[in-house]
Image (tube, rainbow, N blue to C red; front, side):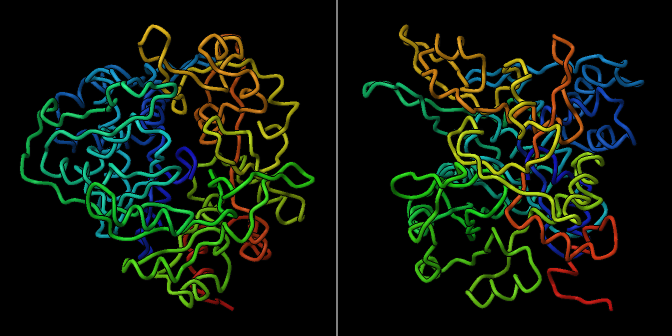
Length: 465
């Protein structure tokens, strides 16, 4: 869920309740480094680092990023270098350690299962994050927002501490161009244990049975199941199949072609879980009647007390839900990826056009940048949410910048680690949710808040009358 919304306390709570708790791995390197700069409240990051097999790297991490008294008021966070195909070993080590920290904290002290979710559209950090998560004993890897064909084979290799690589798409690449790969070398990081790691299960998140068929037959290694996600789910949605059409409110129109043929999925012989619209009372039973092993739920958990969203955002959303005065928009332009992205229409967030219009365009995190081939033959990086003139100078079209929002900074702000930019402005949040957000009213009842356990009881239809 977003960036650090499903952080380790939420994943831990869900796991302790007997379900699969999932941490978000997107941008986790920046999140963990910012926690350290905020004083590592509770000492959790340092506790996890002390348990890691990379003691020397962990000591360097603490020395570089830990601020015992936190930042001074108005002080910006120190920035990590943006990812490139040639990011150095230390940059990868930061991601590796951060993936370890988040999973270790979610799993420590109990036998419950924990997964990690990553975006295919953010490929450059993924191998390093996964290797760290595997050392912490992650049980399941889930990936959507693209076709993660290379990931299963990479998991196989990294479980044996062997080099792994992901093929990276290069915009403007010529037919004779050599293939470009993001490589990760486990041997570059000395660890105390060299025994093989447990290879986690891999569940690609797909929005069409054709994609499930492709992953089953053409993935680089074995998969263990699917998450089938519909267009009502939060975050990034798959674009509608066929010609694109917008309704009168400017939202993409989904039709019969976007309904996944579950009979075809079932023929592949893998278990599957349904996501998008099933986070309701009776949704689990409905999914099981359709042959699913269970459901994946994000929206209800995003606004519970253990969620990584800021307390203020959680309170605002729950209050507006109780009033029946909140809506979710599927914005076809917000994400630099070109995928539709769900945004909660909430005051003083980047979903409001007037709020975003006041923001000076800056790209200083760069997770959603695309690699492109420059006229010189070198590889450059660009994002349609960066300053328009810079994007155009890199060969991008000005039309592609219209309506694009800096999800990287907006989602960091919603998780409570907003950057203070050079013009002294504080980055404002953007909140994502599935379409079923008003269902929270049924869960809340007369209360103003609820827990992760309350969500599970609701989904399992456990009534406490």
